[in-house]
Image 1 (spheres, helix red, strand yellow):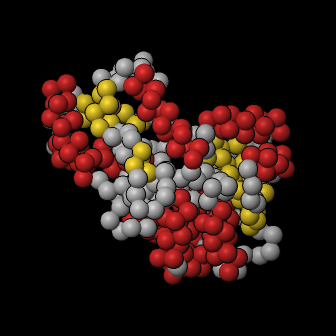
Image 2 (cartoon, helix red, strand yellow):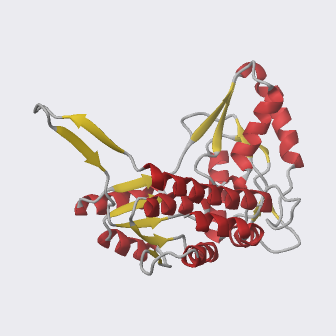
Image 3 (cartoon, one colour):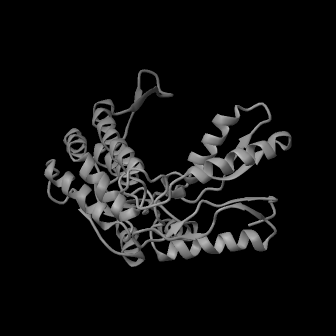
Length: 305
């Protein structure tokens, strides 16, 4: 695990460029993700020496009870495309640290990042068969859930439901991390500059594609106009472009399906009565890609999808 972390660090710039080219996020964000991935493997290298358990008294006099944790066996790890290095690291590092074998299926949109991480794990000395990479779509994921001893899935709600139901049918543990709909609440006495910065970073950095994104901004009526005006000015300054350009703040959407989904939600927001204050239109840049201006709506309510 320590060697994996060292190898990731040594290849940081190369891996960040690969991730940015493949997934689209700004090179700055991609670099931070690579650094974080190494930190996770390094953390679990330490956790290997802290195997936890419990020792409690029995109801029988003079008898103690010791509780130890054992490996589950073979775990299936199914990860999305929005964080193609750090989400796999979150799952792979603890699985290996606690003695499990791994079947890893990345999103089919980010095979190069998954391949690079697999190469690093192999080069770090993982025994043959301990860590296994499986490429493919949903049918591969179904096969994994049908054969492993436990499964961890990060992705959409519909797919997560299927994974949970399939795992329940086999009576195996299932961990499902699904979509979020997160409010950022801005009180009247908030520092406006900090609040706007939090809103911009939370909503639009990492190309806005994270389950923790601030998808709703709940602002005190007393400052809503002041906040909105300041937010629009910040949005105007954001650079939308190819992820590998160091000047880029927001890279292109990952693929045509996600782009169509984004546009459909923008249209839906308007159809339900939201007022588009800024952005939301497709942009043309020097290189082809699914470039989208950051969108901001007001006049919205909790009844809107």
